[in-house]
Image 1: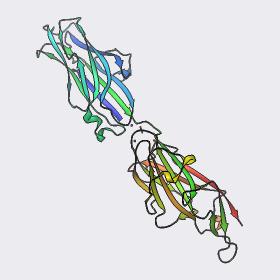
Image 2 (image 1 turned 120 degrees about the vertical axis):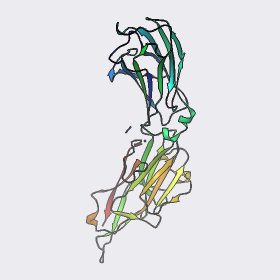
Image 3 (image 1 turned 135 degrees about the vertical axis):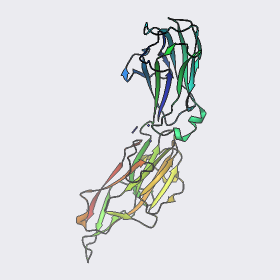
Image 4 (image 1 turned 90 degrees about the vertical axis):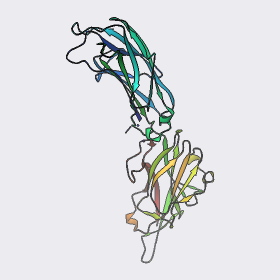
Length: 358
């Protein structure tokens, strides 16, 4: 699943060889990788850096981030050589001007230095250092920030004058995969009293002892509870997700606004939790599915669900403990939705043991 980004740069260095191969041709090879080191393959097969082919050389990069950052991404050397793939065909008329230029889209900038060569004859060689950069317009565009986005840029080799008979036979494709880091969201599920002041680790269930409700649940000690789901974004970038609250079937919502959401700058966890650290709560009715929650980098969000035990026969209580959970889904996929792989644990589960007061 790589909420992953893939940048694909195609450096086209001319047409593939046709059935009548020219006498001389320009081959291309790649080497001297800086800033990032790719995996290199030729026509889909692994190859050592610097291998050239009549066909396609592919360079595969991976960058772990949530969006592109404007500026240099990588550099590599593009080495060019005049060689003789066949003794048949028409010989070029030297000298020949060879240009290296970017064509097509501008979502990624490819800058070869130098970009123009004068090819003197068979055996000539030259080198261009190609810088791969991310323009400000790309880095600041949300359309290019999604996991799995592909940007495409192209370099092409061309010769002058037209009809020089010097062929270019190698395509070079550089793929840079920008992968969203994992485990940015920490998810906790814990229980407190309804005023969020006291942590609850176990419960006592009280039953009616007499009358028509004898043997049915009367309440718990303490009587009013809150199932609390805390999400902390430990990464720098904002995360967006859907949240599903799940309560044990033995419980019911308490009040018309049983669900509240609170936010806090900075991180926390259940061991240091203080509701006073959070802002005023926002009521969410009895909604157990909250969509597209935005959580800035480094901050925390708390969703609380006020509960009381339902009026049910004791025989319907689960064996020994109640189960609760909070599940994060990919934004826009609803509940239960597609599990958000940036969250751990997901779902966050809570087991509350209980005893029965006879």
